[in-house]
Amino acid sequence: MSALRAVLAPFVLTRILTAVVALASVSLFSSPTTCPDVCHPSTNPLLDAATRWDAKAYVDIAHDGYGPVPANSAYFPLYPFLMRVVATLFGGSDDAYLIAGVLISNLALLVALAYLASLVAIDHDAAAGTRAALYLLVFPTSVFLAVVYPESLLIALSIGAVYHARRAQWLPAAFLGVLAALTRPFIGAAVAVPIAIEAYRKSGLRAAIAAAAPSSAALVAWLLVLWRITGDPKAILTAEANWGVGPSLPFHAFIDLFDPTVYGFPYFVLGFTLFIGALVVFSWRLLRPSLAGYGTVVFLISVATGSLTSSPRYYLSVFPAFMVLALVARGWAGLAYVAVGAAIGVVFTAMYALWYWVA
Image (cartoon, rainbow, N blue to C red; front, top):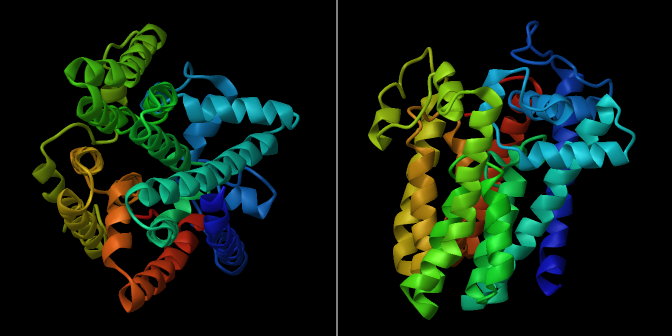
């Protein structure tokens, strides 16, 4: 409860800032004449601004399931399922689905912040936990934590699973790990790594295998369900290949970094990658092996998709990086990070609301 109180004020302030910037952007500036996906899904400007790019896929799945659009196989089921449940409670209108997505994202973010502060406080002081939550909130791509995207849900489930594993509470850790595995491809199932490491340190190899099994089994089970739905045993890889991405060696993603037809301004992408990568390296000195291992696995998955165009969003899931940042960036360094991150975040929020790709 103390962790929740500590993160509540920055949570509320950043939610207000995100909403104000999004509303101001759609009111003062013109969007592209041709929208890349769905145009103006709502007459409510805030709901409309929260539904861009991949958000359309989650809304479509929540409405219609996986059948009509093969490309939707790349999106995992938990977030749209929750959207459908909440939207039904709100009457089932088109706006109800968008309200559900925004509500789930922001409530999950609050849970994630409380879990993050509590996890840091196990090994460090409470102030470091509050800083870690704040630093996540002002990371430049944090707009994705507020809109119709599953990032907040994934982070809440992953941090929660690790927190309970640290407490040797294996049942809630396994349950949250299963849900994380059903939220995002591959990154969600990576939570099996820290759970297994914690179980191994406490009880040995058999306990580690048993602790990691539920989230791994959930991933495999969903892949089998997708195979049955689509008739394609590689449905996720097929969908991603249609977008020109897919599993690759990490260095391959850097090949087209300075191609102007792919990246309008690659220095942000490169800068974020080097920044998070450096924090992941330092995590092996400052954090437990379970956290450093998780951060490393998620970072490598993020840069092993053949492209870095979405990686700045994926880096939000590398929560151990923000724990490291909270330990090393105090005083003026912390204030500088907050100022720069928030300033870039304002620009990225406006870009997202105006249909510009945030990368």
